[in-house]
Image (cartoon, rainbow, N blue to C red; front, side, top):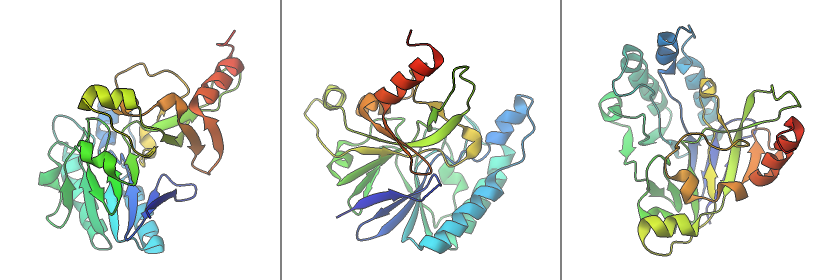
Amino acid sequence: MTIARPIPSEPLLLVEGGERVLVAADLHIGIEHQLWLGGASVPSQSGKMLEGLAARLEEVSPDRLLLLGDVKHNLPWNSLQEKTEVPAFLKSLSRVAKVEIVVGNHDVGISHLAPPEVEIHPATGVVIDGAGYFHGHTWPDSSVFEAEILVASHLHPAVRLADRIGSAPPERAWVRAPLSPEGLSEEYGRKISGPEVTIVPAYNPLCGGYPLDAAFREERGPLPRIVRLDEGRVYLLDGTDLGRLQRVRAIQAKMTGRGR
């Protein structure tokens, strides 16, 4: 039996079956370069992220560290920051764990940046020891849905616990959502069933999050069609269970007056 449990108060997932896999998603190394181009000077977060992951690896001692997409940030090129930091980051982690990557939409050129000991899986996903992993920006291979549990990322899920003036910043969150038979049938042309999908929050704090309590205003790839997001259950990093997303949205609308 394969189970998944979040690391308390951290955007990290530990998947346990025959092996133990530590999952981190959406590191977006190099996002500071884009912020700099926009006029904001922000120190690189790769050192802090490396320190945090190394500490958890030592504590948890998993068989693998799986980086679930968007290890790097800039598109369509690799910035000088990425060319410097990504190889060093992955090399350091490889000294203490077997590192694997599922390609995300920002990972163009990652195979040229990753050291040879890092295993790279396609964007269509991979099944490891009974767990199916995919980033979520593209449709996964249908075989992924045959896994015991499913894990995705890409959405940077967050919620805003706002008061009446609606000024609270979004907080990173976990989502566990059932599959959407309608969406899957439309894409794959046949009935597909499977377990709930655990959607992992972004590991890089600079990524912020896309507030799930508000309707999506932009196309976020097929993941919102793969799962029934409104029926998903939302949890804060500290484990607080906020209930189903449709309930969270209703409460937020009432608190901010949008439900009047």
